[in-house]
Image (cartoon, rainbow, N blue to C red; front, side, top):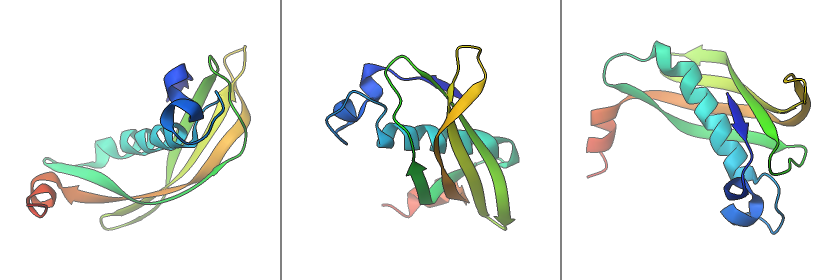
Length: 121
């Protein structure tokens, strides 16, 4: 997935710092979106996935206006549990992924959406 960093994505805007660079919470949200896209075709009717664990290292700053490519690759599956290796890279002027911005692992669990929500009430 590719994203363009806007003012709304900065650490200053999301409350995670005082600088106008890509904020870690927004970067994490993009990584989670990539895991959701990666698991989507494996879900049955009425199923969704929920994030249960995150290990993300934010390695480099990214300026407003820059493009970021986020990838998620399933590295482990056991029943309903799925683990994904995630990475984010700045996209160069030539459109190719360049400098590594973040890397880590996100765990998701497949659940029945209705049953999951019913337990909240």
